[in-house]
Image (cartoon, rainbow, N blue to C red; front, side, top):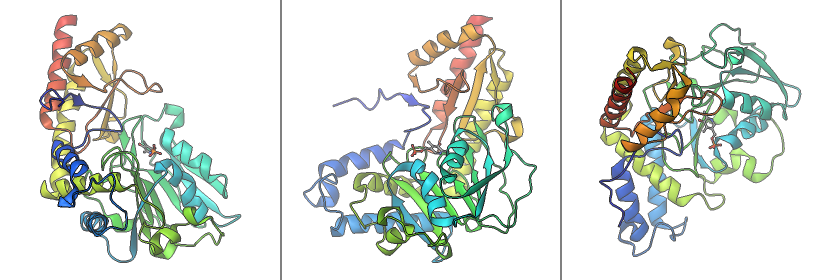
Length: 361
Ligand SMILES: *Cc1c(COP(=O)(O)O)cnc(C)c1O
């Protein structure tokens, strides 16, 4: 048995930390799922046991998001990256244009894929500033099929604090801040999130789609790439990712038991406040994102001297802290502090930052 008490503090951006209780419950399911005498890894996706799992997962998504029957909730494969093209394929008519805000590398990828299916108008971008802020000055063209945004920029550590007001359908890639705070989910036409940042393990993508948008593009699509197929079949057109959906359900159960989105938002704000305070006060580090746009999920910071990088990472490693190396496009460090990250782990990281500053002083 691997000792769980020796577990590291995982600040990785994704796949990322999940609640310890979820790991324990999921491991029980691997051995004997709901007293069925079978592993969750071998049960049929048509079994009554899995039926109860996917129904509970959907019900939890609906309850946490506060959405009604005008929305479909889907559990798909292919990651958020598949949604980059599946969204325009399903929603953008031939010759029509879509509006995009370019706030980071994932936005840029979504833009690239949308161009296969229509005209793309990038109405605002922070690319020239290495994506250090969320663009706020723009006009949304009323004749665009939709406006696409990335709610949290995982790589650059910026996050929307309020969403664009628009009369056209709003689409959001919420991969890295889904269910991290209460928002008005009813404002969106389509939301998608790869599970591996804040919802569960890699392998499932949560999609919330306003039903009146189904079939909007008028295209004849391969069945697997048509939202309508999955809506009609309740995400069971083909074999869904059974285990990732199970673990996502357990994670949402945990989130609900923690008090839901309001409670988790408070927890996330506290953690981010502790960490950003240290980033701002510690002479060895400096934050990269505009303060008002700072992400509560991914905190990016640079060493004030390049030679600090290796020794700081070494000190982290010695303290059992994992995953704080920054993305290559920003450099330095990134601490991802998703829902499941305990406050104690953030406090430990802050202590290590302070210890590092003392050794450099
Ligand atoms: C990680 C990430 C993606 C890519 O997700 P995949 O599931 O690997 O395709 C897309 N968008 C954002 C905001 C992400 O953080």
